[in-house]
Image (cartoon, rainbow, N blue to C red; front, side, top):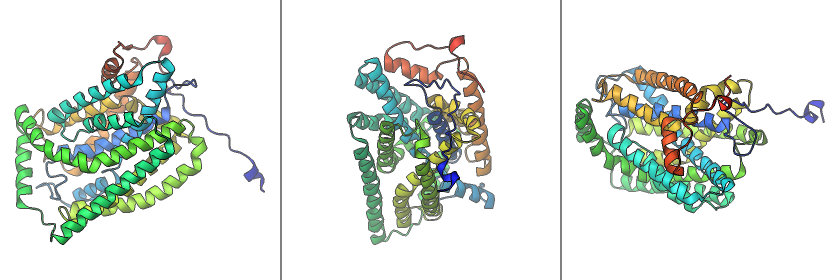
Length: 421
């Protein structure tokens, strides 16, 4: 055995930014960083739907075509769509275990508190869906959170097996549906009514506030069906995987899982990217066809692998030489995830709908991507500034007050302010 093999590498200490005390119950910098990274991915996807009523129909927005626009659409579909809500859902399940542990340490009754939290998320989600963006996921989290609460005593291994079974059954369901469509002679031709509906939605979104809200209400039935049949099984599976990881404390000491993280990267980037390419090709070139349904079934299996590869990469970066920089860039936005998620929708609504500039259908995909990156960078800076002086983000404070039926501290005391790099 060589000396190199015998010598153990000293683990790099976790960044202590954002008041990372070593005591039990301290916030985990890597969890906040992952949540911030997930927010960036979610914004990159959501903004494409807010910027164009044609997105997701398989049709190009008139006047926004060309090779560059096509390339950006492909990159977003392959690398971002259907991946980042899974990562965010995994973190919801992981944080659920932290909240459960915190309640047990304080001797508080967990179920009433968590039910109030879910109620608060549902109300916020409904307002968000009607006023700002129909593609809200908070309402889905609130409903599926009831299942998570009921399964809070499930064993980690059982949770993982249940999650895998959920994904497998969903993928098989899509395959069977694709067979039925193919047998019925589904040609994949996009009806003329789709283009007409997208054009009408564009004009409605460019109208005044009442017109925008009516357009959102008209979209809600289709969005609800998408949430129920496509996202809900995957979100619940991610909840359960997060719960299992939380029970094992998997993110508290990632040095124990370095080999697993490397494997997740190899498998996730290989299978996940291949699945993403198939999904993107079907969504952009074969919408409304059996091929798209097959691709969606494949995506149910491969998207979690790519999401896991992304997570593994961020976790390894946090433990690397640039770990402090990664945490500084991502963790503040992650700590204020609810405020930032809704803030993204508000700012995009002001840009793209009649609430403000009414730019829907007028900004090419490359411009939309640039807006997303600029907006997230601004949120990261603003979040870091806010957390120098406040214990919680504004909406996090409000939700916590409702959850605990108390008044949380609004500002940080000078002696307890988070250290800054």
